[in-house]
Image (tube, rainbow, N blue to C red; front, side, top):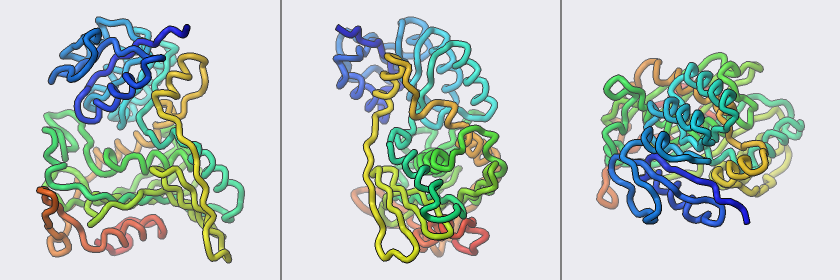
Length: 369
């Protein structure tokens, strides 16, 4: 009989509840021995210890896996504590607030001989390495650049869901709740994985053009062009001010065609010049928790290790330390009500985000929005 791994979850309300449910659903392999949240433990088994403080949980209970769904300023310290106590870590995204913290936590990982898996679920798909392989095969010619498009719709109430919502900084601590660094962060992380950019040093420059339609302290409608060490670029158009939700995707533009990888659907479309229709491929995905359990059991490679997320952290750092988001012209912002919520949508945002990815230029350089 396989001994169950002991799991503790810090942050068990909101998205954190999904980690509690995932652990309980794997009861043959995992035992939820502890949870921590200042708002209480919620609905957990009677045998599960409940702590009000994450650090107290990590210090007070022996864990094989610690799942940290806590505010970003706590990630480096809590992950370091968990590792020092002998636990492997599943760390929610964004992983750490700075490149310095990224390198410091990597040193802790090495010293502890434990692993940190980062909560970029899209990296668990076999479609990510497959897209990279197709891009490198020459089937679409030479790579011109990479792109990413994310078009979602979020209400004004979304930006009031928590005291830290819609902030870059709160009481001097990094929050990074902008469209680039939180709701559509997976677009950047997935594009980097396909492009083979992992370390902070793989990013040479970040040109971020951040905009906002909502009354927030961060961005909700943004574009950025990232120059990579190999000389290629990644151009991303990301917004939560679209009139409707689109499936986000990563674009690889080549000299003889292009690839579109829908990372939420695990599907790749291959568009070749001279072919009227694309070929579409579907891929399987492994859950990050299952992947981490396999690593703990047999030492298999992780799909989303901390080391793979350094390029993303370099972009996060550039976004939160750069110029603040500028307010969009009110004449192109529409205010509508639906389902008891109020939405601000931006005229032309869909065309603008798609143009950024296809042309490889920011809103500013395209003269859009």
